[in-house]
Length: 331
Ligand SMILES: [Zn+2]
Image 1 (cartoon, rainbow, N blue to C red):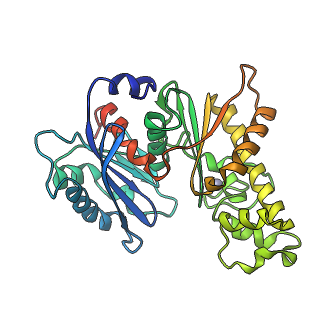
Image 2 (image 1 turned 90 degrees about the horizontal axis):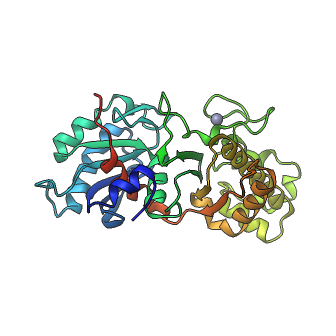
């Protein structure tokens, strides 16, 4: 069992089951989870759903299917935990703001949906925080109480646990917008409205813009790609394409720089990296480790830098700590 602060102490006592939902922009994964094991799961394509309200009935059907076609009876399942790609107020179980994804999320009454569709209390959290809970409980963060997790993908997620507690803040934004720490004063305009955020300088959505604007791009094999992603970038760089190497190294510097910023902000023992880009962990981790150990001000010693262990299962496995340690909802 995990030993992460308040979560660890509580969870050692008993076995528990919950439903977990990891809702992304195009897919939703539903799971039936018991302690640190996923008993059953399925992934739904929700690309065409358009709104959160439109997806909920399909999520309820999926969860019932995972439970043998039944609504759980007699307290065998303790609750529903859902991770959403928006800002979420955990204590009120409510989405607050969306930055373009699921614009109806703040109007949906998730609590009522949980009670009426499944007869269960519902706990909602930002998806990146839920993934950090999963890694802390059952993955790379086991045994640590002070953790920063950075997710490198279409955007850059950055979340923090301090002294065994998820950092949330007054407006539920603390420690969940790590990708919007500024790294460049005269930088690119970001989706959040600011300029020069890490996410605007080196993320999945920024990469095509970066490639288009890079000097000498006409001499590079990268111009062959219409939709360039990090997989193509890293593989062209591995083949020795000079421009691909330069852009890859620029991204590594941005990620390492924002990591130093997050280490200074949150004083973690360990930084965990997740997301699709970590397929190239053999290049990314050594670079970031050496940069952080050189530049982060940590007179006590060296911050651990590790890859996430649970992949796409991290958020599902964050369900048990959410359901078991929730405080009463305030309305
Ligand atoms: Zn931003």
